[in-house]
Image (cartoon, rainbow, N blue to C red):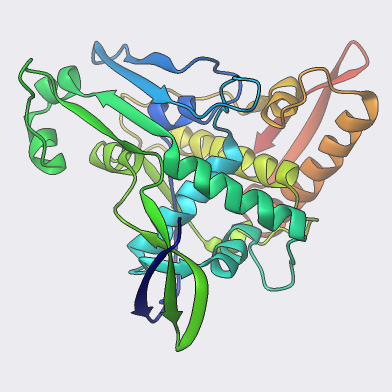
Length: 305
């Protein structure tokens, strides 16, 4: 529902894009991880972090899951708030996610993005941080939380705390704008553990047709590569496990929602991947990449730095 209160704001430039890369945020936006409940395990520290999602239902009563496209939207909201922007237009959000003025969103994609923001606003997450805080007492102070009656420390809230309002942005009246109410819980937790990555927003400016599928691929590849690069950093924490530099094609197909992908669909995905990775090479984000086959079929992508 549209809030008729008019906000006035002047937007600031985003100098860096921020994305959570901890296990929790990776699991809840991973289409391969089914279910609304789970436990994120840190074997090195012997810590368990239970979580639950209150997902929306479709017309058939099935859960509407979260995916890499949703994470890109949430990461954009985080980056805008860190830049000092708490109210933005939908066109600004389109620009942020599309990555450039030359990329125009088709009406169907715009409508889909508006629906997704509504979904993220109404999807809730609950995270039990009791064990984590017991190991690191300063985390409770950082988050500003206290144990409940049962001695548990639990954070609950919307995936994207926000509302739709009328606003005056840069001197122009915007009938439908997004007002961020607070930082998402997943950012607060990842930031507390120093498990976020920052990168130049230009990396999102991939010269590719903007569709839900290409946005999912761009978001997933970007996060996976950031994690791989971070795990290879000589200065990384000893608790950070060195990751394999390969990404399976089957994983990428499923992240696009293609469970039983046809030959044509797989080819389209590979073409998009090539465009995205070629751009990453041109931006010196990666040095090179290589497609590998197994039994005459495309099997994985090796990323080189």
